[in-house]
Image (cartoon, rainbow, N blue to C red; front, side):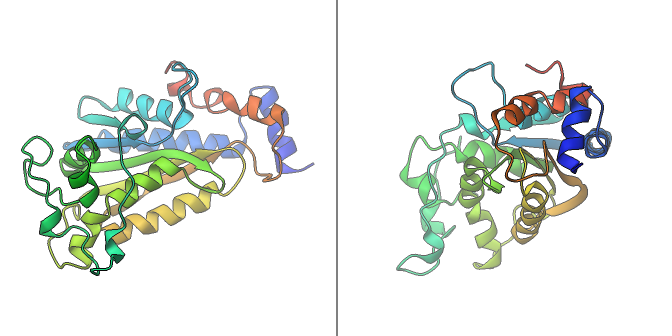
Length: 255
């Protein structure tokens, strides 16, 4: 009997699998750790749904549950609901690397009161909302990114966000300026169906290091319903819908 078969059998009886138990403990440890933080905590959710407003993604429900359990200093930004334009790729333009240069500075006291928003896409698109993420990020002591694994990678909304935050990394790495996020502790929690979740988290941890964050090992983990990448049956997806609810009590009431 494969792990996947055992997992389905146990879930059918609402019995936790070893992986489920570990995830539940990781979530509890995350909340316990965040409660020790005196400064601002930022949760950034990046998964999406559009057909039914009541169908909240598992990672967003998890973010809401964490926020509810941590306290008033824990803030949540749902990037899926923001207007975030694509990165313009100015790291490798015909003029060379011009990402985050002074010419891309957004002169707007609401969007950039500290003058640190230097992004061409933000400058060229007046209704772009990357500034909402940046303002919260710069005030945070800890940031945790949450999202879904799709086709073995972090979802497109998360990827778009990270590309759009390149100006923060580039101003320090290439332009030699101060790193705006060098003192911010970071984490990443991703959920998926059946493939590559652990590697997605491992890769993003490395990306966060390159950005200049200070990754907290215990804040990087994942959950996926099964371990058989070829299992794309309708039944398995229906079972997974409430998979996390079965063993993480704190998110059962989050609707």
